[in-house]
Length: 311
Image (cartoon, rainbow, N blue to C red; front, side):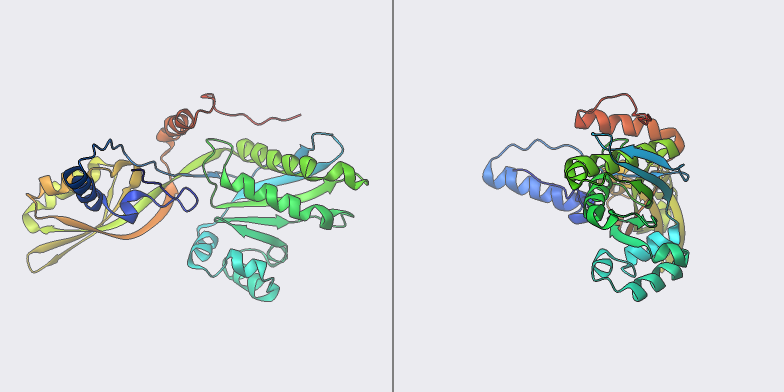
């Protein structure tokens, strides 16, 4: 029996089924089918982004005949929230309703001149074609967008998906012969330039955060507070309703495994929690390197932190 986590959307087991559901399923399979099950903690999917705007970097094609000039910058929270809410979406961009999309991007804080040049919204990232007067740009733009999507699916630091990222193609120098600017030339040039720009700007990890409601009797307030704080959690709101506690807390998914069992133990079985929302927040600075290293080790990548490859 194999349980597969959706790596594309970043959905995790706790959000999908919940620990208690999985414990029950495991018990039923073991009891009714007589199958021994080996379990481990689910894989947590992080997001890679940048902490500041990068300089314009040059990406060269393998044949050295094409040069792409790329920069990356972090996305504002307001713009990212607009993408998550669906006001700005991949589908709407593909339908090419330019006026509607431009208005939505401007409302989310993007400059109008930049908003008009948005070519793609993909997995919480935006691609902007900021070039002017490039003769063959229309012939290679589909390849550039393919490279953009590949880079977003697996970032340079630990091959985790990217998020909250704006990627701009600012200029290009292309060979006049189409044979020398095919997929094998343009895609790696664009992808590598995105990676180099992200590493130069400082690639950072964002971790999935769950906003949960915890219900428990009043006398267990101290126990619940200690439990939340022990897993890097944060109490957002505490309300009392007829002798019962309604606590709203934010908890990092990576440290939440076993929370259901620990909550039951801390409240003598009288506490329960419910998922309210999920989002991504920047992983604390002191944890960045260690978490990135563990991800690379799990994926069989080089343990050394990647560095920008600048010519």
